[in-house]
Image (cartoon, rainbow over all chains, first blue to last red; front, side, top):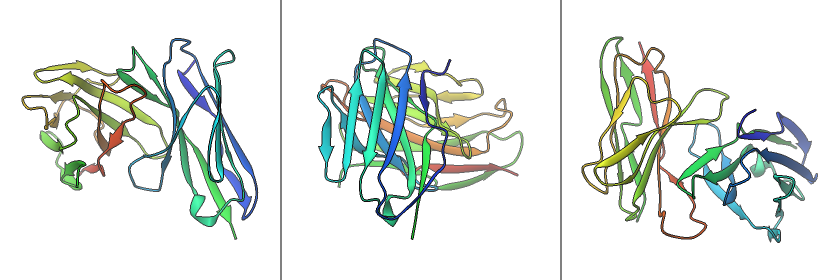
Length: 110
Length: 114
């Protein structure tokens, strides 16, 4: 089993749609959780950290369920500019290492 | 501006040659990392370093070497022993002493074997 698994995608949605990404992790000792965004042929960039209480940043909402080892990202009112690959990331080994999921590609269509 | 600088952005290598990818950061981060990404794939850890003069192998270290002589610099050498080196290479760093620290990336280096 891979350490971090994500919805295989790709997700093709119309503008204005709400889309949800799911991520599971296998290491129960994982400490920190993040969503990164990667545009085609570019480096990943931090989208948002994920907290146990859930957190929201504009149209983006992240949730963490430690008991189920599950992370989610919800994007409301999708924009064309949201088209990218979304990477789920967890830290292991007392925060020393970052483990990346394979990513889920999103295409928002006009 | 603070950040991570990778060079070169594009590099072509002949089979059998060693090449070195540069990574410099001015974020005062202790930890630095090298990842490899193949088309349509996730990031795989090659090497990481938590402190100067110390580094550890990641999941796919074979055929690669690194050094960490300065806090700011973490160059990666792709040796001739790496059988399939064509990929996108990403250098990253983080402040490991900060709770909930995040990892920051350079713009990446594209390596093609010709």
